[in-house]
Image 1 (cartoon, rainbow, N blue to C red):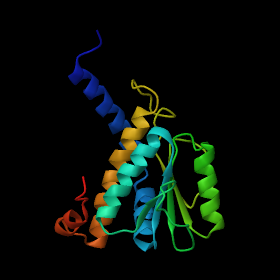
Image 2 (cartoon, rainbow, N blue to C red):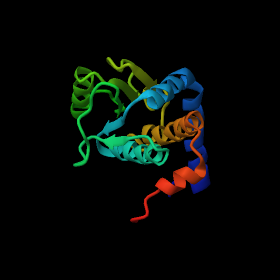
Image 3 (tube, rainbow, N blue to C red):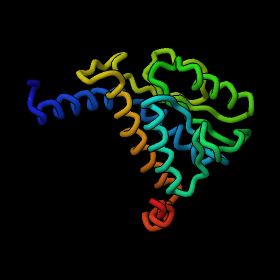
Image 4 (cartoon, helix red, strand yellow):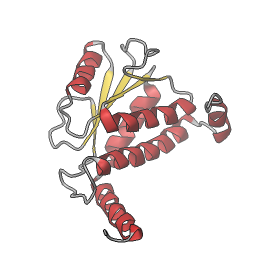
Length: 178
C-alpha cells in the first residue's frame, strides 16, 4: 500500500510551495487589474482545466463581475472591452487557442494561465510551471489544476479588495437554486 495519507498531503503541499516560489506576483496583479477594467470576463479551458476555470468563474460572479464561460448556451459574443482568461497547461489545446485567437480578433484583452515555457501570444500570462519545472508525484495535471484553483482564489481575494466587494454583497449573489 502507498505512503500514509498525511505524508502524501505533505508531499503535495511541498509541490505547491515550490510553485509559489516561482509565481510571478506582478503577472497576477496585472491580471487583477485587467479584470477590474473589463466590461465582461470570459473563461475558457478544456477537460479538467475547464472544471477549474468554471470554479473560478463562479468566484468572480459573486463579486458582481459580468462573467461568462465559453461554450455555455448563455455566453454572449466577446468583444472590445472584454477579457478572455484561458487555462491550458500545455498552451497547445486547439479549442482554447482558437478562443484566444477569436477574442484577439474581436478586440478583447487575453490572458493565459499555463505551465508552458513558451505560452504564445496573450496580453497577460500567469505561468504556473507544474511538471515543466516543478516535478510532481501526482497523476497527470493534478498539480497544475490545484495550483490554478489556489492562484485563482488568491486572485479572487485580491480583486475583491480592489472592487471593495463585501462578503454580504457576495453572499447575496450566491446561487439560491442549488
